Length: 316
Figure 1 (tube, rainbow, N blue to C red):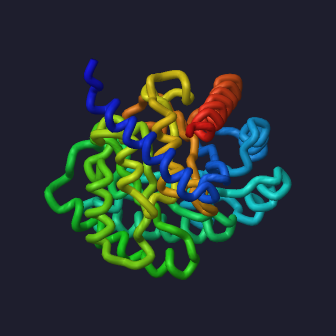
Figure 2 (cartoon, helix red, strand yellow; figure 1 turned 135 degrees about the vertical axis):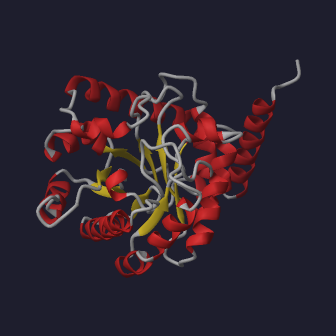
């Protein structure tokens, strides 16, 4: 029986993975760098979040960008102290972009708030040793466009933050998000066009998300490969946005594509973010943590992913 097109693409990725591994086995020796985006745990102490992730065998966490003002913020010194006490490190910081800090807003005061927000998070990421800060070009939870100038306003606003990323040595990771959640930048091609329009040497990287790729790309593995060296972080969840292994995601192709583009290099991460199918996932950030649910979610995700990674690494 003739293979379906996605199966043919799966086989092409597998073929390339095996060929490149034979050609340069040293490139594939190191395993993928795994992290967990802990903002989804909602309201609980950082100590509890770190303990949960660490007990699952992970060394990195993606921190929530909640440094809003001088008074409404996380203490970077305390955060770093807790990370060190748990023998953990920050992979990066995820931006929380709501209508009040929307880079694409038609209100200049809101855009200024977004710029100030980005600068605060870049400072925080630098202080805690994070490698990247995730930028969403428009507000999450607002899928309808304000007008036809969103793209111009967003790129112009983010460009003003370029010197901050450059000075602090933090990578700006722009994230494409499915059209059901945001009005701007849904695909890898979209994000490349956005980065070109920002036109700043410190704003060149991509934060991918395989759940968003599921609806916005032709093939998830090919989309990862299309990001190439620009991909600094990749969010991981299954097709139902549950724990990996609880849906129909071809996680083997994701793993192979990640190795092909070098996601096992230092400073590049695969970060678990199984949020559930919310049109506005930020609701999780403001709810009390469902401890038993999250404990199970973390361990199921990590164990299944590591099992599949070992299977993939044995391919020849």
